[in-house]
Amino acid sequence: MRILQIIDSFSYGGAERLLATLNSVAPDAGLDMTVTSLAPASQRRNASLPVLEAAGLEPAYADVDKLLDPQGIPKLVRVIKASGCEVVHAHLGYSATLVPIAARIAGVPCVSTLHHLPRRRDALSDKVKSWLCIQSAERGHALIFVSDAARRAAGQIYRPHPSWRTLHNGVDLTSFNPVDGPPAPLPADIDVPPGAPVVSIVAAVREPKGHEYAVAAWPKVRAQVPDAVLLIVGDGPHLPALRAKAEGVPGIVFTGAREDVPAILRGSTLALLPSLTEALPTSLIEAAATGLAVVATTVGGTPETVEHGRTGILVEPRDSDAIATAVTDLLIDSARRAQYGAAGRKLAEDRFDLRRWAGRLADVYAEALGENDRRRTAIRPGAIAKPEE
Image (cartoon, rainbow, N blue to C red; front, side, top):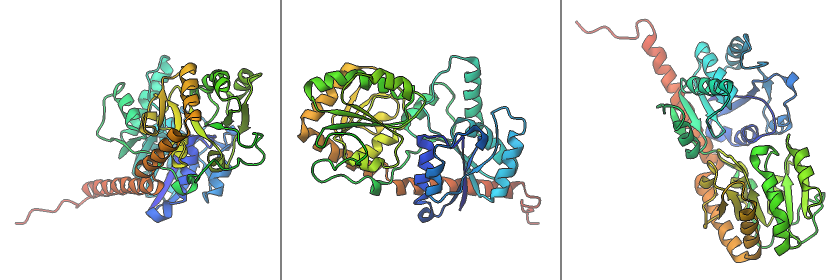
């Protein structure tokens, strides 16, 4: 089944990289994928481009400059038709707004996924954009939310629709194998003393990820575990401000964006994500798959990836003291870390396996294709048989 994946841009983010991961198992699920950026190449939102290319995809551009681009829908119709796809899948807000309309015109069934946690907006323009996105996306075969929390959040703002469904994203568990024994050595170019306990945050450096609360917690952690290192893995617009906050705080190392996250996790003692909002944090699934205990916040879909007291510790967002206490407790208690890590790996296997996710997506695509075929048959002249005389 030929699937055209259209995403807002090729920026550095979880949704973009998920498509690269999905393509590694797509053929086994009977899927032939291509990927297109809604935004033009001229916007230079291309940080994930090398990852997509390395995954065997041939990224293309729809050249839609903005949501109100008057040529946006016609451009997308041409892209969809030229791709020869049987189903088109829109990812993120702008794509989920425009692509279902273009797909309907092109006569191709559409599925949309929102990878964020819906929230009430203050600005009128944001409210209108969000409403348009939901209204458009639910006119396709399915509007997918990546967690039950995201779906519930949408239901508190908009009237739930029969097209809504939850489908957890998947992770390639074979790339995130647990370490048998102490953590493995970190990649050689990361400046961390050998044997130091490492707490890793793997996330795009944006304000909603709450990095500053981990930075504020770190002096308290170091007071109890003097050699502990906070490893901040990722890049993003908030990086300069975060570096400024971390100035003078010992034991904090910035790595920038990395393509060797599995190796970094295998070299970590603990995973941390102090987010203020999350739909479904892929980095925590990857950490669990690596057999790491986790400290995270109680936001959005995070409790669907971390079970408090079983695979990790959940704390309230913006609470640096709680973060410090939870991290310190787990750094000190190696037995509990190991217990949580083993349970986390089991949770990842049961709930977030990549191949299962690909198979479930294939089922959704097949449903969409079947529904589209039935619709075409129903409106085809002569499709309704004449009654027997």
